[in-house]
Length: 241
View 1: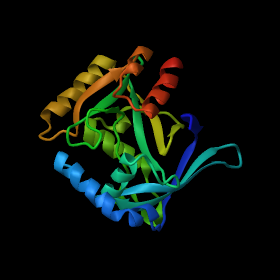
View 2: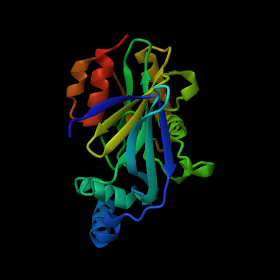
View 3: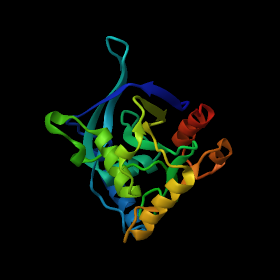
């Protein structure tokens, strides 16, 4: 499937009950895969995460574009096997939110995943797979709250310091649904990067190995950037204002 970048006005995510047939049918294979991954990286933790069961783009009265998602709870080992096996169940989506922190001179902040991460070394915006702590009363899943928390935990930046874009950019890349909101900071790239690196240096166990700023399309050739990141940044850097 071609990677798509969609403009969305609002996210509408809710938790649902769902028995994941893939996880049940291939449980023994998944457990063996998890043990192998754990031997290679003992820091991996088999906590609860939320994946998507249904994702649809709706047009509300008045023209607002809403991305509606039904999420269900599973274990990280099940999600990791599904991802590592090449997304064999195409009824499921990896839905997550990320902040695209943009400096005053037009560069974007990326985190280099640390050794404890399941995708160590890759470059992403700060963020993480939603989990049960993101479920609010009534079953709504607070993806923007997840984004704000992950930004602070990984970089030390508070989202309210930046100016949030009113809309979302949703990148659909195979089974990934990356919901990205831009935050404009008044600081230039060098100052923003120095601040984040200072935060990482002070952390006893930082989640990120390093931070980087990308402001030129030539940087998108970096093999550490997954396709959904390249798709978003290609549009963002081409349309920089």
